[in-house]
Amino acid sequence: MIAVIIRIALRYGAAILVARGLLGAGDAAALSGDPDIQVALETGIGLAISLVTEAWYLLARKFHWQR
Image (cartoon, rainbow, N blue to C red; front, top):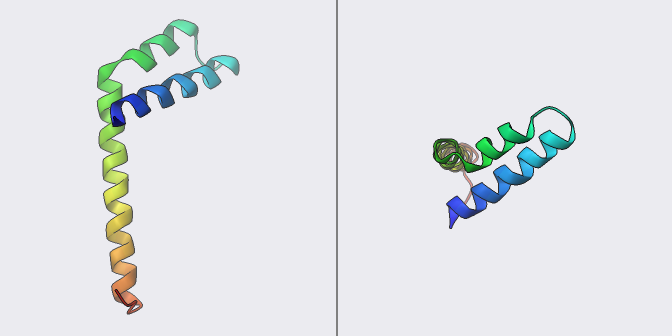
């Protein structure tokens, strides 16, 4: 399911870059269809979520928030 969402996000992101003239149409097709980019993005999102979770836990311990 996450791969589908990431693929859609890459297509919309590439469309925005093409509309602004920052990316060519061929490059946009390669960006949204490349499985390596999708895997890298999934990994990055997973790491970001885990870092936010750990930071929230550390703040909760520091400020003595109740569970």
